[in-house]
Length: 270
Image 1 (tube, one colour):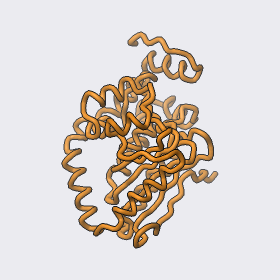
Image 2: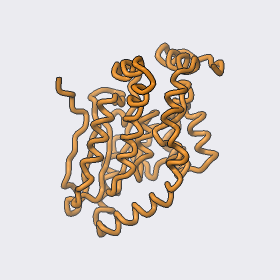
Image 3: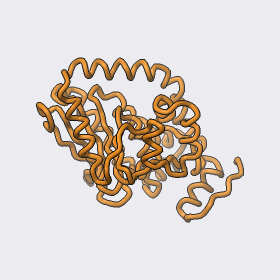
């Protein structure tokens, strides 16, 4: 059975046709990241590897949400997890692989956020170069509240944006919402827009970048990213296994159960 397409790509936009738009839309209110959705988003990023005509890529969700993060109700992950450790590691690898594909693109990347970016949605957003956020939108990182670590290589990326203390606050306490104003003040997002206008604001920024000479733009992005992220692998190579390990704890089962049952969890450090 052919997988439903959640991702569309439009190229040839903006000045000299150098802007592209990638839209992720599952047609619902949460825009969750199922494994298939993540594979499609990864493929979308990789499709620009040999594209010399595109200078800037905008990634956006739908009008109601960028993404609610990993789809806890998706059956593929549960099926894989039941098989054994190797299958669990394979299953969870698609998230960091998706983020890495977006983070390694030579094109400048801009994330346009409406509604919310939660968990894996926030991890994907910080993998891009810039973020434009609607004023009524928010970020939330619920992994620790679910008894998990924040993985997908996200902590080094967040650290580069907002520094150590705020990274700890964002990851440890961000089961509470980070509203748009705080996200901008902290440096998690670069620009705010009126609700419903995040893509338009991102497109204006993309057009300004697209008007610049493409080759030095790519070189500059690559140099800055390599310098800023030189130690990222040392910091994040283990987070996949931490994610698998924390996923076996009683606290994770309690956190996930409390989330699905809409109650306050009780963690016991087990």
